[in-house]
Length: 322
Image (cartoon, rainbow, N blue to C red; front, side):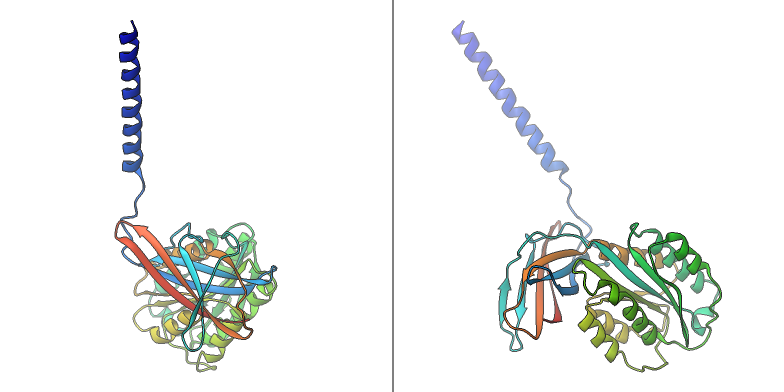
């Protein structure tokens, strides 16, 4: 009888081990692995002083196509300050990451003459903006700015979806002239900045769309970029068609913490705006201690991401006046 009980005990133990092993194999086998990402890019859209004597650093990480990658936190983000002579000092997070509490976006739309050279470009741009608007959270605020040689704030910043859709459909702006891109972007910066100035978890941004080159004063984006760095407002730029000024668009987005997209045809503009929305909504805010010295500082972030391609890393830097 004792032998029978012992054999039954061994059988039960063996069954439990097999079941546990099978369950473990099943979990590991079903574990989601990212097979689509081959490289990553990090950016710092915003750095602001927080209410605890430190700074909040906003970070987003994307794949090679600009699609936002989620769930980045202190485990896979490393921060440093970089001095003028290249020396670095590690900054340890003073708390967990969080998402922006409010996103404030100014969308600029190019109605210059070249956009009317066919019957597809304007509807494609408007449809993409409509997609962006429809993806917003209830309290997120959006502004619609239409430009050619002049600027029209068609819909001032609002969270009202109906007002935004009405502004998008408004055909009162004629355009069909030259391209005042830099002035339109600066208008957006001026409008989003006051709402975010004293809110360390708000994320303001400007999205610039154009199929050409700026040919109205101001003739350079220097003051725009400087204002964006001081105010910590990222600009996401979209070059459309065959002749956008990609050099300037990349320069603006790169220095302000945004990202540049080029879309040669009408087919993928919706995807571009979905990627921009994804980057904004998946931005991680990490609280850090303030730099030891006041003045202009450079913050560097190094992101690490595990996927089927291996361990991928990316770095980004941004200037901040502390």
